[in-house]
Image (tube, rainbow, N blue to C red; front, side):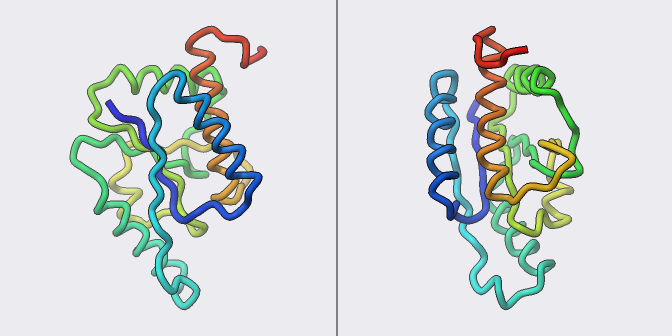
Length: 157
């Protein structure tokens, strides 16, 4: 089974890139997590938000395969504690999914077709974060989940 972390567009801020690299490296001690960049929509500044979401959705759906388990990082998703998120990850790893894909949408969120195709939605907080910051927060939480599952001391509760 493959675990993939899909994002729309490049990360602009160096501090976010550095933080993401740290947690991607740490996660690879436990399992292979592949980061997949979906390129920005061309001329997005000249399009309405709904059009941008639609075009991003088309790119996402074109990359998905039938056996993929798609998890959206979305403000309307299920809220977890870190421990419960770790158990959720453990459950998914024990399933027979071809790929588990965690997806961070663009700045406008997801198209209706991506919502319909998704298998699950997870919220990182009730607060709103930029889609750039969510990347780092998710990777930190995924790493934390791995340490919880291994009873390692990173998660101090």
